[in-house]
Image (cartoon, rainbow over all chains, first blue to last red; front, side):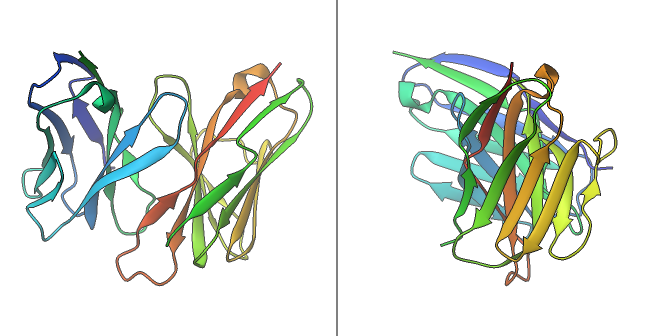
Length: 111
Length: 117
Protein backbone atom coordinates (compact mmCIF):
# COMPACT_ATOMS: atom_id res chain seq x y z
CA UNK A 1 0.00 0.00 0.00
CA UNK A 2 1.33 3.40 -0.97
CA UNK A 3 2.52 5.61 1.85
CA UNK A 4 3.54 9.23 1.48
CA UNK A 5 5.77 10.88 4.05
CA UNK A 6 6.65 14.54 4.33
CA UNK A 7 9.56 15.95 6.26
CA UNK A 8 9.72 18.20 8.18
CA UNK A 9 6.27 18.40 9.70
CA UNK A 10 6.83 22.08 10.46
CA UNK A 11 9.35 24.68 9.44
CA UNK A 12 9.97 28.28 10.52
CA UNK A 13 12.29 30.51 8.55
CA UNK A 14 13.01 34.22 8.28
CA UNK A 15 11.94 36.05 5.18
CA UNK A 16 14.29 35.73 2.24
CA UNK A 17 15.58 32.27 2.94
CA UNK A 18 15.57 29.51 0.38
CA UNK A 19 14.06 26.30 1.66
CA UNK A 20 13.38 22.71 0.70
CA UNK A 21 10.41 20.55 1.59
CA UNK A 22 10.74 16.81 1.24
CA UNK A 23 8.30 14.13 0.17
CA UNK A 24 8.89 10.40 -0.10
CA UNK A 25 6.66 7.59 -1.32
CA UNK A 26 6.96 3.84 -1.02
CA UNK A 27 5.63 2.64 -4.39
CA UNK A 28 7.32 4.12 -7.44
CA UNK A 29 4.54 3.05 -9.83
CA UNK A 30 2.93 6.48 -10.05
CA UNK A 31 1.41 8.52 -12.87
CA UNK A 32 2.50 11.80 -11.38
CA UNK A 33 3.14 13.69 -8.18
CA UNK A 34 1.51 16.92 -7.19
CA UNK A 35 2.32 19.63 -4.69
CA UNK A 36 -0.51 21.61 -3.13
CA UNK A 37 -0.75 24.58 -0.85
CA UNK A 38 -3.43 24.88 1.81
CA UNK A 39 -4.10 28.00 3.82
CA UNK A 40 -5.76 27.58 7.23
CA UNK A 41 -9.42 26.67 6.88
CA UNK A 42 -9.25 26.73 3.10
CA UNK A 43 -9.21 24.26 0.25
CA UNK A 44 -6.28 23.10 -1.84
CA UNK A 45 -4.36 25.12 -4.38
CA UNK A 46 -2.40 23.09 -6.88
CA UNK A 47 1.16 24.38 -7.19
CA UNK A 48 3.04 21.99 -9.41
CA UNK A 49 2.38 18.65 -11.06
CA UNK A 50 5.26 16.47 -12.22
CA UNK A 51 4.56 13.62 -14.58
CA UNK A 52 6.37 10.36 -13.89
CA UNK A 53 8.53 10.90 -16.99
CA UNK A 54 9.66 14.34 -15.83
CA UNK A 55 12.44 15.28 -13.47
CA UNK A 56 11.29 18.74 -12.44
CA UNK A 57 8.77 21.49 -12.87
CA UNK A 58 9.13 25.19 -12.17
CA UNK A 59 6.64 27.92 -11.48
CA UNK A 60 7.96 31.30 -10.40
CA UNK A 61 9.90 30.88 -7.18
CA UNK A 62 8.87 27.25 -6.86
CA UNK A 63 10.76 24.28 -8.23
CA UNK A 64 9.69 20.69 -7.73
CA UNK A 65 11.86 17.71 -8.52
CA UNK A 66 10.99 14.07 -8.84
CA UNK A 67 13.20 11.00 -8.54
CA UNK A 68 10.70 8.26 -9.16
CA UNK A 69 13.10 5.37 -8.79
CA UNK A 70 14.09 6.42 -5.29
CA UNK A 71 10.58 7.52 -4.37
CA UNK A 72 11.45 11.13 -3.59
CA UNK A 73 10.33 14.60 -4.46
CA UNK A 74 11.41 18.00 -3.22
CA UNK A 75 9.75 21.37 -3.36
CA UNK A 76 12.22 24.22 -3.42
CA UNK A 77 11.00 27.69 -2.50
CA UNK A 78 13.34 30.53 -3.34
CA UNK A 79 13.48 33.82 -1.48
CA UNK A 80 10.65 32.95 0.88
CA UNK A 81 8.06 35.58 1.79
CA UNK A 82 5.55 35.83 4.66
CA UNK A 83 2.81 35.16 2.12
CA UNK A 84 4.31 31.72 1.56
CA UNK A 85 3.20 30.71 5.06
CA UNK A 86 0.83 27.77 4.64
CA UNK A 87 0.72 24.00 4.74
CA UNK A 88 2.27 22.26 1.76
CA UNK A 89 0.93 18.86 0.79
CA UNK A 90 2.46 16.28 -1.47
CA UNK A 91 0.23 13.73 -3.21
CA UNK A 92 0.87 10.86 -5.59
CA UNK A 93 -1.40 9.69 -8.37
CA UNK A 94 -1.55 5.97 -9.07
CA UNK A 95 -3.62 3.76 -11.30
CA UNK A 96 -6.94 2.79 -9.83
CA UNK A 97 -6.79 4.94 -6.71
CA UNK A 98 -7.48 8.43 -5.53
CA UNK A 99 -4.63 10.80 -4.83
CA UNK A 100 -2.74 9.73 -1.73
CA UNK A 101 -1.58 12.58 0.46
CA UNK A 102 1.24 13.07 2.87
CA UNK A 103 0.57 14.76 6.21
CA UNK A 104 2.02 18.03 5.01
CA UNK A 105 4.66 20.51 6.06
CA UNK A 106 3.47 23.64 7.82
CA UNK A 107 5.65 26.56 6.82
CA UNK A 108 5.92 29.82 8.71
CA UNK A 109 7.91 32.67 7.19
CA UNK A 110 8.57 35.58 9.50
CA UNK A 111 9.17 39.13 8.37
CA UNK B 1 -11.25 24.76 -17.04
CA UNK B 2 -11.62 21.84 -14.63
CA UNK B 3 -13.53 23.68 -11.92
CA UNK B 4 -15.17 21.83 -9.04
CA UNK B 5 -17.65 23.52 -6.76
CA UNK B 6 -19.01 22.51 -3.38
CA UNK B 7 -22.09 23.67 -1.59
CA UNK B 8 -22.45 24.75 1.10
CA UNK B 9 -19.04 26.14 2.00
CA UNK B 10 -19.87 25.87 5.67
CA UNK B 11 -22.75 24.48 7.70
CA UNK B 12 -23.67 24.24 11.35
CA UNK B 13 -26.17 21.63 12.40
CA UNK B 14 -27.51 20.12 15.57
CA UNK B 15 -26.56 16.68 16.75
CA UNK B 16 -28.85 14.02 15.30
CA UNK B 17 -29.75 15.88 12.13
CA UNK B 18 -28.58 15.10 8.60
CA UNK B 19 -26.57 17.32 6.31
CA UNK B 20 -26.14 17.08 2.55
CA UNK B 21 -23.06 18.40 0.75
CA UNK B 22 -23.03 18.80 -3.02
CA UNK B 23 -20.04 18.50 -5.29
CA UNK B 24 -20.28 19.60 -8.92
CA UNK B 25 -17.85 19.50 -11.81
CA UNK B 26 -18.71 22.70 -13.64
CA UNK B 27 -16.97 22.36 -16.99
CA UNK B 28 -16.18 18.70 -17.41
CA UNK B 29 -17.71 15.29 -16.92
CA UNK B 30 -16.46 13.25 -14.02
CA UNK B 31 -17.00 9.53 -14.04
CA UNK B 32 -15.31 9.30 -10.68
CA UNK B 33 -15.57 11.56 -7.66
CA UNK B 34 -13.81 11.25 -4.35
CA UNK B 35 -14.72 12.42 -0.88
CA UNK B 36 -12.02 13.33 1.62
CA UNK B 37 -12.22 14.37 5.25
CA UNK B 38 -9.70 16.56 7.01
CA UNK B 39 -9.55 17.02 10.77
CA UNK B 40 -7.73 20.05 12.21
CA UNK B 41 -4.01 19.98 11.51
CA UNK B 42 -4.32 16.61 9.81
CA UNK B 43 -3.95 15.61 6.19
CA UNK B 44 -6.70 14.64 3.81
CA UNK B 45 -8.05 11.16 4.39
CA UNK B 46 -9.98 9.46 1.62
CA UNK B 47 -13.46 8.46 2.73
CA UNK B 48 -14.96 6.99 -0.41
CA UNK B 49 -14.83 6.75 -4.16
CA UNK B 50 -18.00 7.15 -6.17
CA UNK B 51 -18.53 6.22 -9.78
CA UNK B 52 -21.45 7.57 -11.75
CA UNK B 53 -24.38 5.22 -11.65
CA UNK B 54 -22.93 2.72 -9.21
CA UNK B 55 -22.50 2.31 -5.49
CA UNK B 56 -19.69 4.10 -3.75
CA UNK B 57 -16.63 2.26 -2.46
CA UNK B 58 -15.81 3.18 1.12
CA UNK B 59 -12.43 3.14 2.77
CA UNK B 60 -11.88 0.94 5.78
CA UNK B 61 -13.35 2.43 8.92
CA UNK B 62 -15.83 4.71 7.12
CA UNK B 63 -19.45 3.84 7.87
CA UNK B 64 -21.37 3.63 4.63
CA UNK B 65 -24.72 3.92 6.40
CA UNK B 66 -23.63 7.12 8.06
CA UNK B 67 -22.00 8.78 5.08
CA UNK B 68 -24.35 8.30 2.16
CA UNK B 69 -22.88 9.05 -1.23
CA UNK B 70 -24.86 9.46 -4.41
CA UNK B 71 -23.31 10.04 -7.82
CA UNK B 72 -26.38 10.40 -9.94
CA UNK B 73 -24.85 12.19 -12.90
CA UNK B 74 -21.49 12.88 -14.50
CA UNK B 75 -21.38 16.31 -12.89
CA UNK B 76 -22.88 15.83 -9.45
CA UNK B 77 -22.07 13.80 -6.36
CA UNK B 78 -23.60 14.29 -2.93
CA UNK B 79 -22.44 13.31 0.53
CA UNK B 80 -25.07 13.09 3.23
CA UNK B 81 -23.91 12.89 6.81
CA UNK B 82 -26.77 11.16 8.63
CA UNK B 83 -27.49 11.53 12.33
CA UNK B 84 -24.54 13.82 12.70
CA UNK B 85 -22.56 13.88 15.94
CA UNK B 86 -20.00 16.42 17.16
CA UNK B 87 -17.18 14.04 16.21
CA UNK B 88 -18.32 14.34 12.59
CA UNK B 89 -17.30 17.99 12.67
CA UNK B 90 -14.62 18.27 10.03
CA UNK B 91 -13.61 19.77 6.71
CA UNK B 92 -15.01 17.73 3.83
CA UNK B 93 -13.40 18.08 0.41
CA UNK B 94 -14.59 16.52 -2.79
CA UNK B 95 -12.54 15.83 -5.87
CA UNK B 96 -13.50 14.93 -9.41
CA UNK B 97 -11.49 12.99 -11.92
CA UNK B 98 -11.80 14.18 -15.49
CA UNK B 99 -13.43 11.77 -17.85
CA UNK B 100 -11.30 12.78 -20.80
CA UNK B 101 -7.85 12.29 -19.34
CA UNK B 102 -5.71 9.34 -20.38
CA UNK B 103 -3.65 10.00 -17.29
CA UNK B 104 -6.42 10.94 -14.90
CA UNK B 105 -6.05 14.03 -12.81
CA UNK B 106 -8.10 15.07 -9.84
CA UNK B 107 -9.56 18.52 -9.39
CA UNK B 108 -10.58 19.63 -5.95
CA UNK B 109 -13.54 21.55 -4.63
CA UNK B 110 -13.04 24.35 -2.10
CA UNK B 111 -14.27 22.23 0.81
CA UNK B 112 -17.19 22.32 3.24
CA UNK B 113 -16.71 23.09 6.91
CA UNK B 114 -19.20 21.07 8.99
CA UNK B 115 -19.75 21.89 12.63
CA UNK B 116 -22.10 19.71 14.64
CA UNK B 117 -23.29 21.21 17.92
